[in-house]
Length: 50
Image (cartoon, rainbow, N blue to C red; front, side):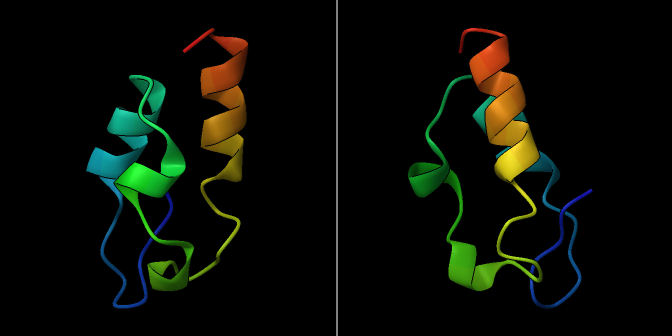
């Protein structure tokens, strides 16, 4: 599960991305502990057609 800089799990942003929301609206890469950690979620959403 991706986390922000303080260690909080990013469950809601993952849910929103899978629901079709763009990453830029959901979370800032600057606030992520690993800036590319949401990329697999974005890829999965694209595969699902969302």
